[in-house]
Length: 137
View (cartoon, rainbow, N blue to C red):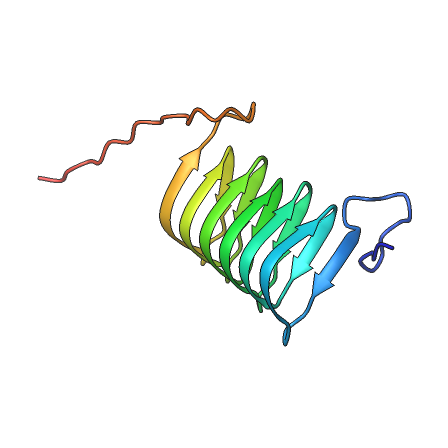
């Protein structure tokens, strides 16, 4: 069974949730989801999904995420492996490492760690982009 957000048509599958964990839930271990999954709970362990993972404002996650599209509005500490996009929203805080072909950080979002930008072809070779710091005299 899938849940739809308000105002969504039945033929649209982009926002169907296959699962949801709300505040007050604490879990330790591995969680595998086949569709869009939202978590606002506390978790220590691995989150695995071939689709989208949404960490709501109440989420406090420590561990590893493997997914396609990862949206973070809560707090995450660990390693993220994403085949698609990683979004850190305005209230999101990420500490650790991100491996993704696309990283978006909204104003107010915090990222403290290392980011490895991969080629969109899901290659394991990192895409190296030289960055030069300017010095003011």
